[in-house]
Image 1 (tube, rainbow, N blue to C red):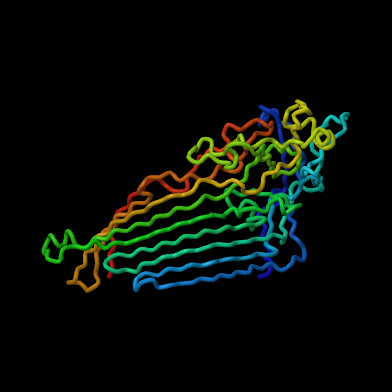
Image 2: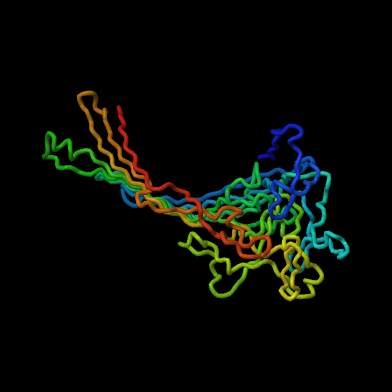
Length: 425
């Protein structure tokens, strides 16, 4: 499959102009707001002459009839994507320097400059924003699938399926950088290895079981008793799966790393130590992320700090960084993309049907009464923390965010009961 290009304009002059300002100061919006920079045009960059993108898929499955009514299957499914779309919402930024400790963004280093410690201009000051699309992404998928099916016999049928898989890519974006609610809208396009991780849509394990039971009734009954006890059918669907991944960030919107991007993302350091083998607190919706397992990026030693680190980050409001702390705001942290896994999902749906066949009309005429209960256990299934509001571990000053790891949304509704009548003929 060849590359796809989007030829679409949704903005007319002057609304494709763009401007942004970081850290306007407390109490400056709207009254007394500082002058915005001059409006500049937005632009879109699409890689010219891209290599052909393609996906290879393969699978192997073995099915076995265990009994006349019971069948099992084991399968392996895999795929490999090459030259996939890599989309960022804003590629305009200051290019960082690669060091032994990771990427470091430069800053105004002249103490005589009134903007000392502030960010440098991005690589092209003629534009306010540049959306980027390259065809250099890669994707990988492997999964084990198990299935067991018992066909209807003696009024009972059940089917179960289990998938254990992993999807890895360098970006899950296509038409927009944040195609999913847990996406980072502008990954580091200058080094795709930084973004290689679990796909935004990855769900590691999924189990689904469904069954139907036609409740038997005594054949000796007749009249109203037969009508009341005959034709009942019970159904159940059970689903359990792991959560989707998300990325820990910090200071989003204030550009603490001095990237000079209008779509700035900063990444903290991951810490080791006791209690940090896992990075989340399942069952704690107020503090789902273990914030104690992360820190603002720090230099490996004082010599590195003196050479590369910003002593006066703009987000500190004029306060200098203590060199002995080794805090290095403009250093990209060591956390990887999608290293945190959101809450899983557990759900049970239940149904009760009453079939009433009216043979006087036709052999198959059926007035079916249906009662369906969704999420019968009324179990709260939380969505992962909102990106970046609750995925930011620290604010732009390096202080732990009060709402880091807050789970504020659910992926399923509360218990719902639905009654209906269905006529079948």
